[in-house]
Length: 149
Image (tube, rainbow, N blue to C red; front, side, top):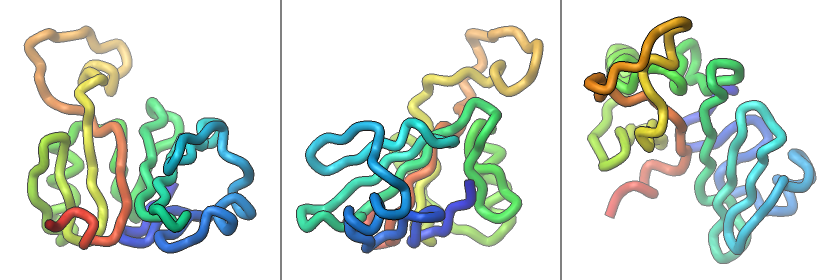
């Protein structure tokens, strides 16, 4: 799935109403007060709505190597965080570190919850308990102002 920094994903854009999103994407798999989950898509994603029912943030989750998140030709998920950051930096994207990843000034964040192991990225690789490198697990898209105080 392609992401557009500060804009969204195909069918879901920052500023869209819940009604608009559901008319394009269908009913979510589940929802809570301000978040709708689309678990039957590849890759899975969630939509965060503000109090007015307008899209404020979109999160896309890795697809375990099957359906990943891209920005142009750069694969953002299910890769080592350091490799993703290097590719984005070479492409001219500026960022700053945050507790779970990096926020990019263009309006997106690549993050890891440290729940995946680098050995999962290489077929046949063995788990190494000393390998603490992070695997990019998701991308959040919102206006750049979302991450600024």
